[in-house]
Image (cartoon, rainbow, N blue to C red; front, side, top):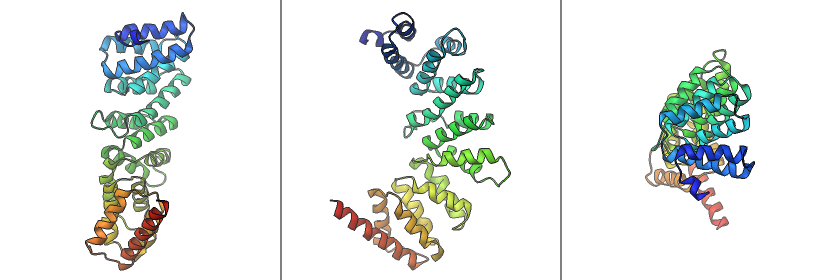
Amino acid sequence: MKEIREKDINAIFQHFLDAGRVENDPMKQGAVQNYLAYALRDRPPNPVFLKKLQEFIESDEASKFERKMALGALSFAATKETVGLLIHEALNLKDKELRDSAVACVRDVGDIVSGTLEKDDFTPKLTAMWFATNDPKTMLSTAQSIGRIGSASGVEVLLSAALAPDGKDDARREKAAYGLLKVTQATAVPPLAAILEKYPPGSQENTVAFRTLNQIRDKTAAEAVLKWLQTADSSAVPLVTSWYSAARSRPQMEAVQAVLDAKAPFRSEEIRKAFRAGLDAYRAKYEQEK
């Protein structure tokens, strides 16, 4: 197996086929599939091999099982070349079963690259896919992947769709809302903070932005919420309780402490008191758990 992994990508692909077709060894074939994915990731394939892999996926000569494994390798590799081919197959494969498999692999891309935007941000490719399809499954998979990646531009796309008025592409609005539920990255904070500050408490826009920021366990998300609540009136007091009810991280608590220690101005003293009470309760719980 070590020798196989060190071979060139064409040879690894042939070993992948032989493991299933000649040796009838599904366990070995699964292991070689992983080697193929690593090779696609670490040794960017030339256009000739990518074309070969595309023809393999689209040909009826190979089994669906093998073609699904090839799609899985494309998503696991998560490079601009492999994701580009995967998206093409998700939009164009004629066989519904295989197309659904490709669509599921697109969703997995978000999980694989989440938090690693410094390597590759697939948001532009996924955004193009989002606008290119009207299929509910494809929209959902794409929205979830965009949400998990969590780039500012991707979250803006999801917010725009999720906050569209009733009757204007309701299916896309619903799928965008599911995508926002996957957002956990600090890179998503700027567009969410902008929506939070622009709309009043209780509005749909403010509620969606606040809820999504609550999912991000990062200091910058806490600072965005704090900044807005400093200017909010007493009608936003219940939101302080809601904010504390989510699982809070230590960096978030440190952001609250810094604001309270600095005696920063609050429009509503009730909101300041609510933050102080929540922080005291958090400390008491933390000390008890220790």
